[in-house]
Length: 402
Ligand code: AMP
Ligand code: MG
Image 1: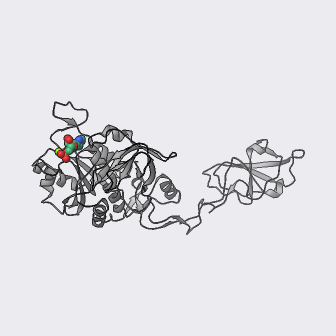
Image 2 (image 1 turned 120 degrees about the horizontal axis):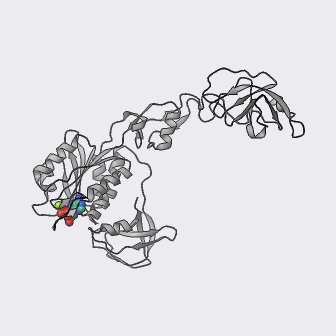
């Protein structure tokens, strides 16, 4: 049996990052920058008002007070989007709106609330400092400033910044496209009727969603029946539009119904291995097709499939984008109840983690088909290979679930 670490290292060694592409901003959510992005223009591009008010010369309002307000003529109004050129004549003001360009000669804005709001003439009852309520050109970024460093995974704010800085496209490694194929003669699409012997399919629904949560574009392939031909046809078909394939089921430790094993054993570089863990011992990984697309053959039991996804597929998705940002790290917690674990295998036990209390309570129902107990859990408590039981009060490593 391989250790979890050995198996993961072998997977990561086989992953080649997706090539960077020029992406429209609308397609770039989750993409990872390969180069620094710097500002090409000052941001904001021109001096503008941060308030609705009056653009003034500070010298004209220097003597203003409640007792002796300064009365100034309003020479006109400048709204956001006004591209005209305005010169402020000493002794006058312009009414100005938020985001409107400052007229030449004005060096401050008096907010409308500090005036009588006049439209012909305005009374200003207090002085204002130079630059007040003016957003200076380049005050957010100057040309050449670093906006986003290489390695950034683009989120909403990053895309907003790129748009604000005038970029229509960005060069980045795109979100991986993942297709999840579930196999099994017993599986029925959710919504369909069951007859005895059948169950509703859950793995592909769950893992496609988990991949989306991880920032991928994910697709659930129609359920594949347990024949070699059907599986090979599905894999070949899915290859065209996927950067990663995931299958579930059909990789148990024997039996002629283990169709994934039978079919993929002859295709590409897929190897099937036992990993010293529970749940999720039978694993398979390799590459298939002309583009050497990585394929994971995960076990069929839903909890095994999900834990395998978290431990092996998730890091591989990051590696496809050459992304080594924040990775969930195990933390320590005290067990609230006793646990058991098979000798020689690392257990990932479902638990409810109370972070402030530093306490993890194992849930009842740790079998691999018990998805309801996984839904109740928010963490996996990790029991090392050589440990077969732990008592309440002992400390364990805990992985928080997304
Ligand atoms: P297998 O590895 O194909 O023998 O499947 C192991 C167990 O997982 C069996 O009880 C299957 O019915 C179940 N299983 C396999 N695939 C799925 C799926 N996509 N959704 C729900 N249960 C599944
Ligand atoms: Mg099966």
